[in-house]
Amino acid sequence: MLLSRALLKRHTVLPGFDLALGLTLLYLSLIVLIPLSAAFLKTFTLTWSQFLEATTTPRVLASYRLSFGASFLAALLNVVFGLIVAWVLVRYRFPFKRVVDAMVDLPFALPTAVAGIALTAIWAQNGSLGQYLPFKVSYTPLGVWVALVFIGLPFVVRTVQPVLEDVNRELEEAAATLGASRLQTFSKVIFPIVAPALLTGFALAFARALGEYGSVIFIAGNMPMVSEITPLLIITKLEQYDYAGATAIAVVMLLTSFALLLLINLLQAWARRRQGGVA
Image (cartoon, rainbow, N blue to C red):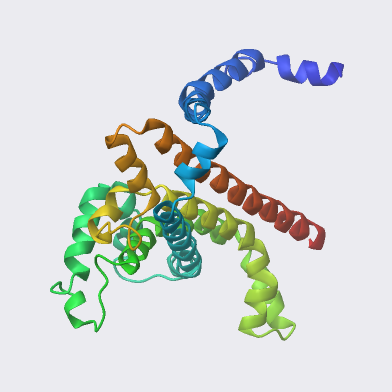
């Protein structure tokens, strides 16, 4: 006990523990806790029946299915191709590698509205790519999924890339020396190391896609019961001055997202413990 107090009070570059903790809690309260609590307090003005009526109408349920389903599938695809992109950037040298590496961050820097307009122009039926497809992409749920894949890829790549850079290649050489195939080396040696980072990238991409608005509304078409996402429905209710209804839907999204992210974090912690136990 005395040792822990001594460690907390020892001189550091940053402020002392008490001051740093106080500033941390103050900042988190102003940025995160107070806005979220305001949403809950506004929702509490509704009765339970009014809350269910606001959050379980067919139109709202359809927006849930689209938002959560498209976000999950987009994050899932980004896990696969994000790992491939990160692997190529880490393990290979090729011309214009820096340009390709910079392009990964393009969805971070590009305004979401610009991304939505560009994707709509490309995938529309008369667009540069959409004109060659036998089916529609823009103004359909598929267009929503395409936009969410676009904005979520950097989260997976930038999460997995530093982990791959730290992987000791001697482990792969040892596996090859013992007669392991490339598939066995990847599944038994590399994948267990990058699995926690992949889960983190999936969680970040999923959370980012779930709240995406700007790049989706242009390509979605925003047709109720078909291609209307939940964030747009919240904005619609706010424009109609139905603040309680908007916050009720937001609370459902928040609680569901929190539960899913908690599950992913638990899986990530389990994967790290399993990796540590194997090591």
